[in-house]
Amino acid sequence: SQTIHQWPATLVQPVGSPLSLECTVEGTSNPNLYWYRQAAGRGLQLLFYSVGIGQISSEVPQNLSASRPQDRQFILSSKKLLLSDSGFYLCSWSKGSWYGTEAFFGQGTRLTVV
Amino acid sequence: GQQLNQSPQSMFIQEGEDVSMNCTSSSIFNTWLWYKQEPGEGPVLLIALYKAGELTSNGRLTAQFGITRKDSFLNISASIPSDVGIYFCAGQTQTGANNLFFGTGTRLTVIP
Image (cartoon, rainbow over the protein chains, first blue to last red):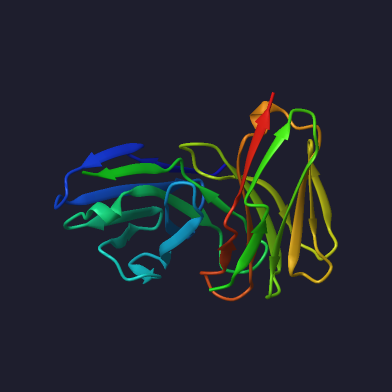
């Protein structure tokens, strides 16, 4: 069966520090991978998605970047964090881009920038 | 992106009551998904719907894919305290990898 792992679960970082969140998927190949951010009590905002190694699409301009160095690995990064980067970050995967496939989420990372 | 209107935004109900929430869009979707998110956790898929008119159950949960393909409904029967959480609908189009659009969520509180 497929599983998705996301870490760390919580992170407190000072303003101006770098960021690296990692997500890995097991039990499938060539998944679509996604990074979302969720403000407290709000919906999901899509940040990046990837359909393959090295292929990254950005949905919103921001202080963050994403990379996919391996088929089942997706990394969210920042060189210098801002206070506004605080939030709950979720990694997700789905199989293929055709309709009828579900998306599955990791446990999330609570990032607090202080 | 596509706009999904989810209602109600929040609900406070007594344990044992039934719950209904819905999601509507101006666009047609090929798949509807319903998720539940508990505090500090990622959303968990509850029900997936693939055909217009489809009615699918998962325990006390029942969801329907609207005939027009522009809406979906989720019902929870005989609510219990562990039903507390935020419920999200998501509609999936056919085109491209960026094809899943989420509603804004319904926050459910169950009063024992």
